[in-house]
Image (cartoon, rainbow, N blue to C red; front, top):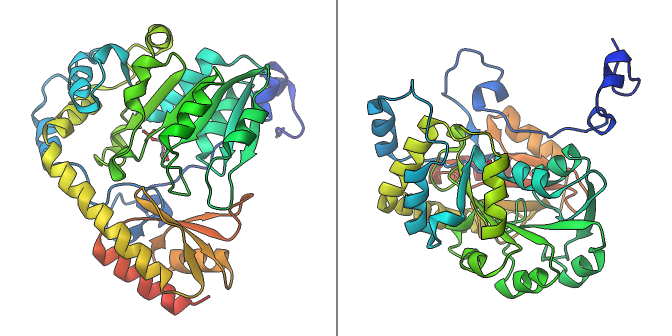
Length: 368
Ligand SMILES: Cc1ncc(COP(=O)(O)O)c(C=O)c1O
């Protein structure tokens, strides 16, 4: 069989940059992680995907069970959802487009702006989908390292911006480091005139946002998701808030039925049950602070403060991979990184209090 290292006849018909593409390393559901094909959802503690351990609102389950129109194509303009989002976000529905997860919107934005050879500035370490999607478009990723506290080095970003730069990615709070970018710094980057995409996937866990600036700046895009705070990762629904001049092209290039009927129902019902979800978010934020403290008590770990629903930890004594594997063998799944600026790091999603207790107990057994 031919491989991408040694292209055969079929690969020669493909786009060379896609044959070379490294691909994205996704996370997997628990039954896959456990190698269990029975479909059982029992056993294991999943702290690797920044998912919501409390699940979706109970009202979402009811709304999905009583929805009758699964046989009809969904509204391609998801009008009811956008109207509800207008009230939630505080920006007119005219600026809002939903997507099959915010992942789809990242892809759409890059398809709109990037031609092969164009550049995108990425403030590393950050969310892996940015690099993946840029490479999918044949674009070039220009990496700018964050500082020791993982803050964006704004002057270095400005220096990295060149003639072929189209866009600057900012994840705020940043995945996997958990820190926010200040409003002033975002405004400074907007002065470059390039598209500044602020990914606020974890907004609800910190309450800070730059979304209010979107109608005033023609180069600011803000992305959000229902995957984390609303517990809808499996249904795939996110949204983008776009400047007027950009939004019309996003409508033009998106697949017509990109947000399926179930996802639209679930997102709408989540917004209708906002008080319940706010209480869930508060429970996660409270647990984040407790987890941070407990991790900090272990002398072999150094947790970084987080404004999101996960905590990045550096293993300062011992072997991070061994700890990751040890946790995994005991049914606790976290994310392990061995990438530039993330050597010996684990990212741990905030779970329920009992998950924190089991994690800390196991970490103590594993030692540094
Ligand atoms: C920073 C960031 N943006 C976007 C996403 C993707 O979100 P969605 O599930 O809406 O595609 C994630 C998921 O982990 C993320 O961490």
